[in-house]
Length: 114
Image (cartoon, rainbow, N blue to C red; front, top):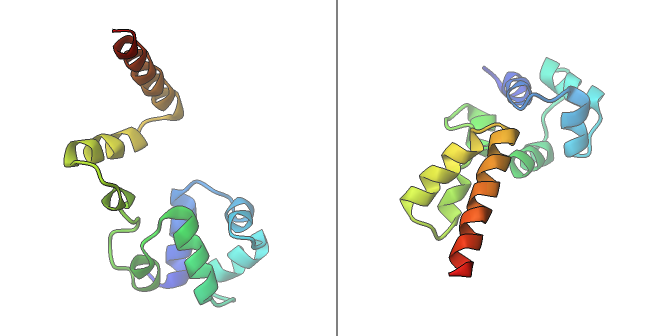
């Protein structure tokens, strides 16, 4: 897979249209389409913007070296259990994430009352 194909693959994994993907990095949907087709070069600026916006590993986008996404939990001063919970939380649907937030807030309120 080349960089153009990886860009398209990433966009599809994020479930975004070319227009929405482009808008998130200040580009048109047509420009994204042309990059995905290989008729327009993927510039260093585009790579930087995509990686910043979506926490993408630049080495994956440029060379195909896994993983696709950066592990942003490495930058946090938290233990491994919390990192694992964070990863699991990110896999939940929006509805389930909201439920977890409400449960945590409810527990925190109980603790604060005691």
